[in-house]
Length: 394
Ligand code: SF4
Figure 1 (cartoon, rainbow, N blue to C red):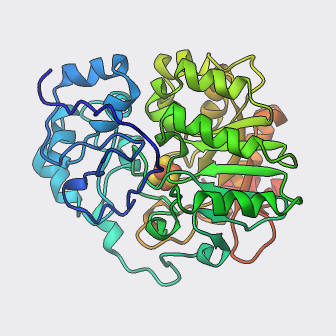
Figure 2 (cartoon, rainbow, N blue to C red):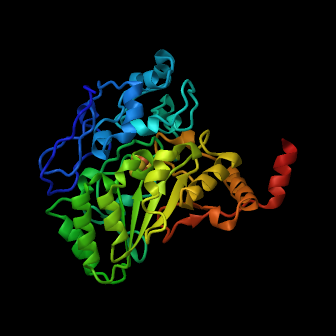
Figure 3 (tube, helix red, strand yellow):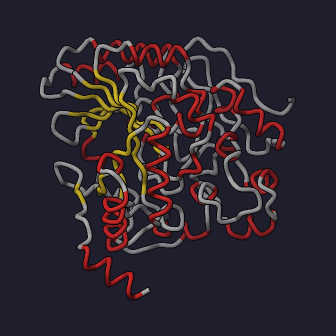
């Protein structure tokens, strides 16, 4: 292999400082000696199908450093007509970014592949839809100090890293002002002090961006700091890494999570059963039957998982991998994401059908975040009559 970037070995003392909007050129995540993450590929890097297959055996930093960042490479890897794919796409400041192991699970020659549709910057993102905005949840108002969001009682969200190894097009934080809210050595003590001084905070949620973008040593250090606060009982980690780059679950990371003082919940983000393959299962297996609680949250996405077969297979596949479904999120009205929106009527119908088809523990809670509410809002089940009418209508 000659054309992928080997991440540098760095002395790491700081947190990530990468703008998720990728306003910087060539979608490069800048790496300097004080940053604990690997950089992403340059936009013109090209990968072969062989490298894509081999990527499952690379270490996680190398895979993170070598994400696919242009439509032509994607077309080539997926045996798609470059012109056809390019004609559907309008790139913007939220760059195409997708790790090779995730690409390897996409179906060759299928332009409607449900994994591909989650990462492709379609022209529909340019549509200006009334009611959609860059911060529909008004999250900025809950930034109590840089890197810390305190929205709900008893828990806070710490943005441990401000970028992701994958750019999901429907991301509700794609416009979040991470640059102003990143943890740095000069302010992370401020955030930790905030938590220390409020003994109603029982849970710290590590989110992002992608919290596991920081390396094992730094992650462990952060966990040490959090666990030194006596009233914090639970740590929740929201991560898409175990799905998109499963080898991120290193021995060191798993060992730290398993031996944590706090209760640890690792909440994955997986939307479609095809996202779970042997590579994912094998790595998750390091945490199955451990004290770490494995949960999953999905986003209900039009054309990707908005049918009963896909959603029930997703729950079954997660359970086979040792993970319980937790939340199914209705999309937020984020600018550029309206083409993923599923109607509430359909969402409720699907939720009802799931309860009729699966045991209760495999049915995720259908929720929506509503700005100003003190908790997530549960969407009620559709009435069974609605389903009957719907079925007859068809
Ligand atoms: S992994 Fe999560 S935070 Fe990152 S782009 Fe995807 S949805 Fe957004």
